[in-house]
Image (cartoon, rainbow, N blue to C red; front, side):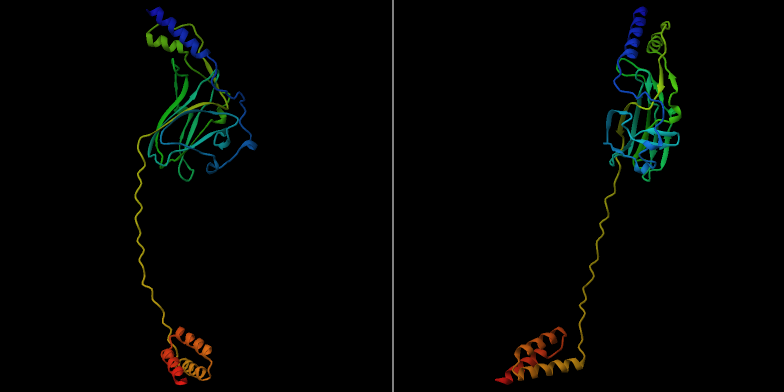
Length: 280
């Protein structure tokens, strides 16, 4: 039974390390030039909007935008959490494919695009492959999406070209079954410009919102400003109306009457009627 387990471990390890790549990994090791930088300010980065819960794969490659980071220029992927999310758990994996891997680092940013927290490469663990998954760097963390609504994934330029050696899957299986270590070569992966990333986001708490307080506007009473005519004006209009009627110029009298009413001159209507009656 032990020999059977050993054989299974060796065969499985060979299959996992020898299968064809499912991502086109960039082979260049030179960091992007300053001329390739799309934006030096995090506020200018293009952010992809996430839903409450996500689970998907994507590639960071030469088609990805280039930003300036403390460790040098890097292609990157930037995301914005859902506005509904409060506490979120993020699982980030960088797959080791063929002989390459994207060495990930993460910046968590606040609403002003200031760095709140940095997840360094050493914060990531190496998860060995099994029958269903590849060997990978992996980190799982929880953050408050209201306090850190943005995050950026990049690779430190000073790590490009460096290598990491991981245990061969056959060795790992042998340890699990208590078998003699097989004669296999541990795979070596080189840190390169691009790679395949898996991202899982799970909203653990929804963000609470307070109902907006209804502000009732106070209706101020409308105060009509009453124009008080001077005595001289009152006498002028009353006399002018009488003279216009007496002269038979009714249109002029009516025009003077309208002006008098607009000025709130008392007695204008009565003066006009009386003058008209006197003509009969």
